[in-house]
Length: 127
Image (cartoon, rainbow, N blue to C red; front, top):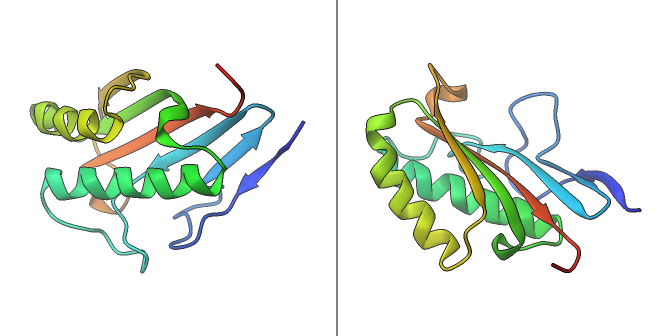
């Protein structure tokens, strides 16, 4: 069984945790907020921030040896549920025909003032 932290290139996590952790046949990706490689928040609007979160998610998944098509569960955290439709549209385009299980919850605040954060679990083995 392979296990251990996944360390993607780019900005380091904003706290004492791994960007992702591989445990056996799964890669658990910590919440990705819209940070650029320099660690600064990307964009002010929900569209740009959502795309940046998903770009970061893809980068971490790839560092863990998986693709978005192997995601089995995702969770979206929003600071304003009124922006759900926009996030949902961008998220749907990112995953295409693949439809992992998902939850979306509204939260009071996110790190660095982000409007959205996305975490995921990917399955490494064969379906």
